[in-house]
Image (tube, rainbow, N blue to C red):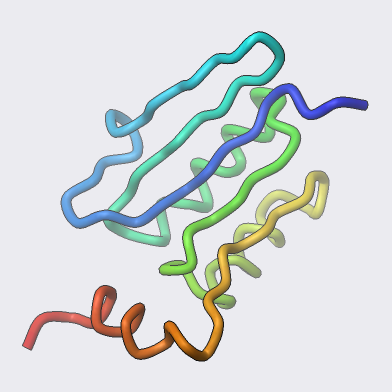
Length: 102
């Protein structure tokens, strides 16, 4: 089976998953990008996408392993869910981007 429909969920300040969506269609694959400011919104978004026929979901590294696991649990393990990971050389930089403001 070929991959024809997948999604990437990402976090961004002020993003609303009901409106901050972008779909990219190539000759053989549809990619949906969904932004959200609250990682908890990813649960409902992922369940909706699976019901819509998405074959694979990747999540931004900003969700971390806990939210990735919650998404996998919410979708019942019916499709592959992966998360972006960063090596140790990038940990401090990524933390600075996602850390709450002082």
